[in-house]
Image (cartoon, rainbow, N blue to C red):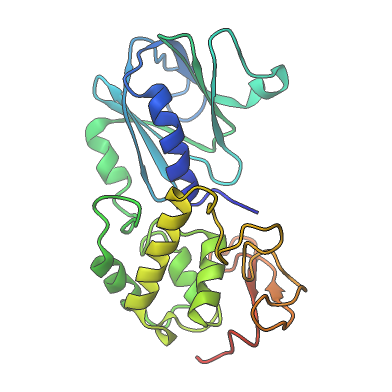
Length: 268
């Protein structure tokens, strides 16, 4: 059940860079967002970077395309002479034909924002430190988590203002690995240890072949996650039935949550 989290977007950027960076756009346009209808022809793709779940495509001269996949968006590159299936075309939000004949397609993206280069940093300023960036600041992540010690474990880690890039899968798995009940205060665990564990997990998933969103160490089907997606099945550690609590619509702190009541007893 891999979902678009910080490690997902990091891997997407790594896949796109060799195909896109340095290429000039010969035709194309934005089909969504406030800049819908803007032609991309004549611009050059200078760099691609990520911050948490956000992807920034730097464009010369002096602009950047900020996108967010949420749960459904995707980036696709087709070879020269190829295109997307007709059934997908209505969902295209970004089209860019490159000078080597390949084409970049942004499909079904909820966030497509064209920014001047100087506006990128302010637009992403609300995000917390990202373990996958060179400017990762573990001490700042610890400070932000400790600022609201009574906040629930899952609520604190889902908040992108504390650590950028952790989504529902990682938050549930980190709760298990920390021995924390997901709705106990985040202060029941050592915050510095938690931040270090989260950073290691994201980096492993983002960079090691075969370990994408594998939290148990085993990529075998049905054994890649300790609790996420395992409702009603035995805990891989103790055999107790894994519990799930349904998502509360409109509450970002109450997404679908899984835990083992034996390995993660209430402490708070």
